[in-house]
Image (tube, rainbow, N blue to C red; front, side, top):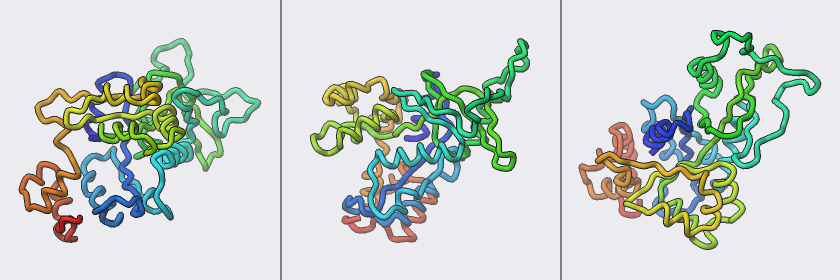
Length: 282
């Protein structure tokens, strides 16, 4: 899902995906058959060995109790601020907070200065190479909307360097089943939905031919922030709807060889070695 979403977002021309974060849920989530987080973290890490732009984050698992989706997104937004020195503005309310590390009574000097010579202007490759270098594995994208300033705080020099005005955002990636759950009365707090869809935004990978347009029209909040919802269009013959963790677990329980269609071999080996998902109960 992450790779397909990244490919589609790049095709839209509105985003450059810097990285992806997989955050396994806390053990106290309460879902039947949920194996301990230590196993889920390991399986996720094994699954993303090759894509160097995706990382598995254990923060959610290591908390004292289950965290809401909203609080997890806010954690990663705050983490990105600390790691990059960025000021992140919400989708609908751009931040007016001063640049981190910038003296309030001085005008910052751009690292790229315009001397009326095109050779002095940063190219996309230079700019995004520098951004990627500082972000590491943090997941963020650049939308074609309001912008703010990216700065690199150098602790040794005690100064901030201003690179270029860009915007960084964290989006929630989900399947259409989660999108549909927004329409179930009482399941989600309205305030959380406002933050998730309104402040962050979501990317939806449809499953099983779900009508995402119909789903969005069933919720007043989804309708309100419809422009912040990106639906991944999958036009190839191997639709994302066949990718399912539920199908993977069932295949393992029944000894179905088609499990190789869903999981990489290192993950399958770990599952067998740890004797996971052998019983119908998970």
